[in-house]
Structures are given as structure tokens and as C-alpha cells.
Image 1 (cartoon, one colour):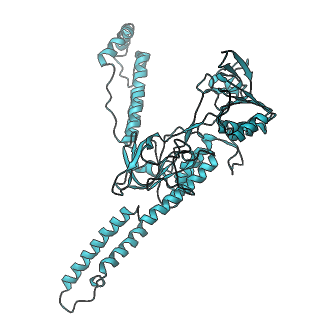
Image 2 (image 1 turned 90 degrees about the vertical axis):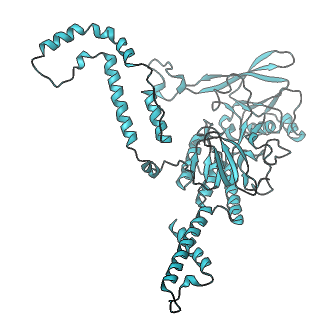
Image 3 (image 1 turned 30 degrees about the vertical axis):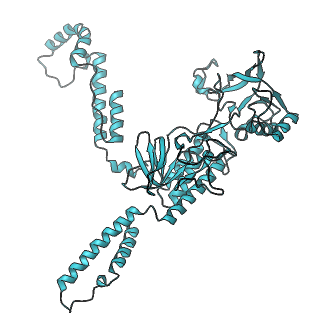
Length: 499
């Protein structure tokens, strides 16, 4: 049944299903049920003898084994599902408002957005409303905001707080509503095609996609400690953004890990609300600027622990508000429904090797970010002061590659906020729209249809003129010297009106 269900899904998506090969032949199944059937052979023969004189249309279900009944039931259900898939009309799927799969047109895309975070969806919304039909290429799961389990409280317009995944899902729905399409894929390379041609985008499964403009919004991933407890308690006290999550730990004790400017800034932000901030650094001096380092060292709420690393983050499961997660006696039935929160950290002195436990309610990791730009090496210029971040022109999202624009954390080594990413995504879409207009790109299909219509109308006019013949022929507007231009202009306007 599982194999049949998978085959149906593949057929629904790719219009063809793989051939299924049974794992067991009829002989294997017969031998498997031989023992079960042997015990019922006598009862079957006697029952047949007693009922031989009276014909019956009822199936002899009482003679079948449980395995045979289950096998027959699965077989019939599979046949019904297959028949349902066979009868489905692809046009009905396309009319579904939730169906936004991308279909190649044979022409370069006007706009392709790489990334599915706030920057990417903001660019898609602006591009779709401008009539550019943007294609968003992004995996269904991933991204910093989509991975946040805690509420997002610092994004404007949210009267009621929402989690990161809920906010991203709302952005996605809005972009799709205005006409954007989505391809669930990962981009592996981007580069020019040469001779001022469209940008070539190579994806993991879809293959090659060409576009006149590409908005890069792949974001940056926070660097983590890779210690026990870190992964499972993200959203439960482990965070990489003090600005985002610091308010949740007001009047509580927190730890900041790092020694650069980002760690200093996080410590100072947290010191405004938290009762105690402990900065843990593996060296005996900070790498941060002297101004920030002095502020941290002089702050009464901040304590610095030198030459120390975190070995493990400790936590415990909190009581759930969901009654289904606990039994009547109060014991936890399903730990997956419980949230594990930070209660402390095991630290180690790198000089003596001594370990001890520090109590805390949150651990903020501030050891840097890595932009997702490794596939762009040799294609665009990078920021010399922030390695890995794409260099853009001052006051715009334009990069060194014509037609490629960078938005969000991929080009922002300073702010790295959802709201600033959304703003830069909108700016990138506006820059891309201006680039298309200035270079007259993105109208290949409309121009071709206009040319074809102009040729057809020109041929029709010539035929009419030749059939009327002589000097007495009535005046034909298409016989004028500007007939071709007039016809093309008329055709273009007609095609655009139809589209």
C-alpha cells in the first residue's frame, strides 16, 4: 500500500509513475497461507456439501483468513485510488488557488528570486504586483526565521504575536496571491551566459533556468557551538539573536558566548532587561573594538569569564498546557509535545581543564554568521570588510553582475533583522524592475506574438490588394509606406489587450 501511494504521488506530480514489482509472487503468498487454509479445509468441504443444494450469492468471507481479507481490502482500495488519479484533470489543479507550480515557458524568466525568507517573499510580492510573474526558488523548509520556534514580537503590524514559520507562511500566501510561482529546489550555481544574455541558474533537481533578473536572498546562517543540548533547545533558551529574543528573558540570568563586536552588542542589549549577563570568551581579551569592549567591562550587570568554553547546555522539560501530552497521573506521555528549556551550562577553563556549572535561563551564541554565498565565488564581488557578504553599490541592491541583485542578510553584515531584510527585498524588486525597463528586457513572448500577427495582417493586406487589381483599386491603409510599423503597433496593442 505504501509503494502504491508513493507511485500515485509521483504520477500526480510528474505525469508518470514508476513500474511496481511485487516483492512476493502468488506462489509465495499461497505457501504462506497454506497452513492457515489446511486447518479450515474440512470445515470448508463440509460447508460446501451442506450448501451445495442451495445456491448463494453471498461471498464466503468466513472461509478466508485474516491475511487474505486484509490483502484483498488493500488491493481494492489501491485500485480505487489509481482510478481516482487517472480521472484527475491537470487543469483542475491549475485552477486551484493553492496550486502555484512553475511551468517553463521557453523564454527567460523576467524575475527569479532565490530564497524563501522575508527578503525573498517581499521581493516576490513587489515583483508580482508589477506584473513580472516572479519565480521563487527555495526549499520548503529552512531559513533562520522559519526555524524560530519562539514568537516574533518586533515585526510591525502583528497585533497578535506569531511564530517565525507562521510569519513566513503568511508572506508566502501573499506573494502567491498576486501571481508568484514557487519551485521547491536548491540553487547550486548562478552565472552569466555570455554576450549579454540572460543569467543562468542551475538547480539541484529542476535543472537550468534562465532569467533576465535574479534577486539573491539566500540569507546567512548563524554559527553554532555544536555542543550537547544546543540543537534541541533552540527556541527554548538557545538563540543567536539577542535583539529578537532578549526581551523574553527580562529580569533573568543569561549567557553570551563570543568575543567580537556582535557579542559585545548582544551583551549590552541584554543588560538593559536581564538581571545578569555573563559573557564567556575562550581567550583572555576581546577581539571587539575598544569602545564596545570597555562598555562591556564597565557595565555593572555584565560579568566576563575569560579563557572558558561551553561544553554542554543543560535544560529540563517544562509542564505542558496541552492535556493530551500528559496522562491522568501527571506523567509525560509524549516528550515530542514538551518544550525543553535552558537551566544552565557546563563550562570548562581552557587553562586548568576544570569544569563547573553556571545557572542561567538562556544562552545567546554570538560567534558570527556565514552567508549562503559559496556558490557565487568568482561570479560577483564580495565585501572586503565582511568576508562572504555580497558587495552592493551604495544606496542600492545592485551587484557587480548585471541583472543580479542582493537583498537581506546575504548583503547585510550589520543589522540582520527580518524587517530590514523585507525592506531590502522590496528595494531589490524595484531595482530589478528599473533594470528591465531601461534595457527593454522581458517582453520576448509579447514581441514575438506581435511580429507574427503583423506578418499575418501584412499577408492579408497584400492578398486583398492583388485580388482587387488595377488602378481603380480602393485605398488600403496597409499599402502605405508605414504599413509595417502600423501593423506591428496595432498587433502589439491587440496582444497586450488580450493578455
